[in-house]
Length: 239
Image 1 (cartoon, rainbow, N blue to C red):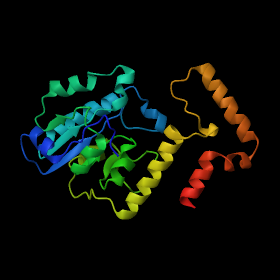
Image 2 (cartoon, one colour):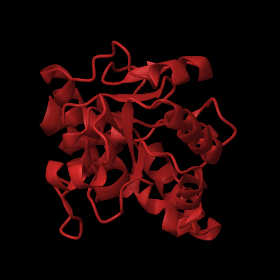
Image 3 (cartoon, rainbow, N blue to C red):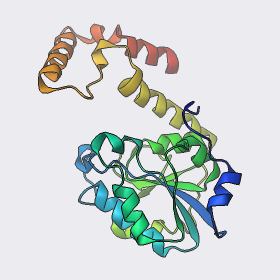
Image 4 (cartoon, rainbow, N blue to C red):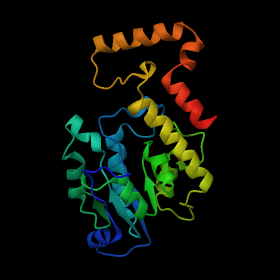
């Protein structure tokens, strides 16, 4: 589903942005540079900005692929506007195109061959739309096979060339991706359950109140969890 504020990037518009036809079109979705790369466990690069730099430099060398870069929408919250744009602009790679924020990511995924990220939620989003993502092996989705995994920097740079890699997702993978998206978005963004309160943007005092409330509820036992809005919704959805 597309946001009413976002425009759809179709093939006609994309062709007007590309000056030369190449073998593949790959979407690169970097993280917000201020996000912590270690929050999800071990990562290969110092931070997400270094991951962005090294990826752009390597992509510039792979001339038979057109790379579309969609910078992370939350970067404005961290005052990062202009940083990723400036680095890409200074490199002047003819095979790398910065896609304006006005276009929805899902519409881009539909018309590219594959996606690249570090460990983002674009993994199930792209899989649901039929495209595989090249992402680090250590993600919250690591126990699934809905994406192509890279294991070290050498492996990452090699797989960026997308030689003999199947980028189509199966119907079973699409169904799994849909379930994963439901769980993630219901838990993080849309749950009305007091067990899963939104912690974003809260100060330490507010967080203490949230944690104490959750702790008291969990102490009451498993029945408190089983009676929760989130648990019931999941149970009805999947069982």
